[in-house]
Length: 307
Image (tube, rainbow, N blue to C red; front, side, top):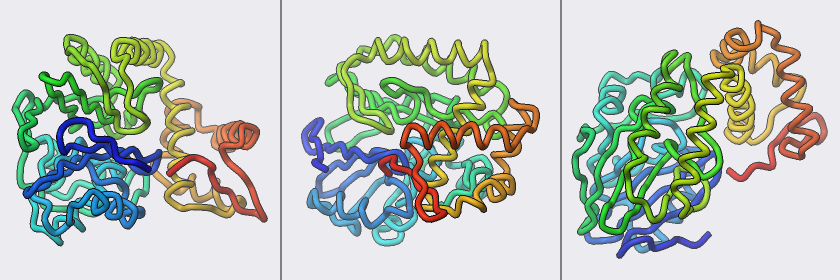
């Protein structure tokens, strides 16, 4: 996995589905943007130190939002370095009051740790990575504290989970509220006036056709508004895979009972599919098994998706 230098001394590190992409600004006062999932922290640390940045020297971490796949290394790095951590002011509030529901951790049974957020970011403010000055744009919908970072000189957009090339990130109305899809629609509209040469998303490879990606996302959001059950179906599929990635593998005979014991699975099926847990579970699993996204071996289930 090669690091990509996107601006002088600012490197992009592409990960997978379990770990959000992240960035390293290499200098005497290093800055990180997002730190992956805590269960894969050893790999995250290897990638960062491979760029010549010691974790003990990190001076600032910028987190694009509080979901576990983007801030998993924050506490560990802060304990080693004493660094500052910046979040949108809503995310700072979640950290200050230790709200593990609004961060999704308890809702989805995710592994994550609270940390000390020392700086709350405002919409429209500038934040510097050495000589590179980015503008913070608040983009709720996927996450109420979500932000993107835009650098106007080089026309670089760090879009996190607000804009992907071909898909839309999971929408969780039970946590984010019934207007979450509308909020994402408004966030995409806020990005529309930007002059963007290259986008670095929260998951997936960089891409250059900003307008096409934006239009695809807008169409998907409009489809969500017309057909809310598609929100639920996408959520069930993605979090099922995410759960398998977190757990590495699960016993097939115990997986549905385990899912029914979470908050997210029964609430999603109740909301969108009239509480028909068994039917939705088997529908999703058979689809994944046919496509090879999930495999079974000796009574165990695992996913082939890149972590």
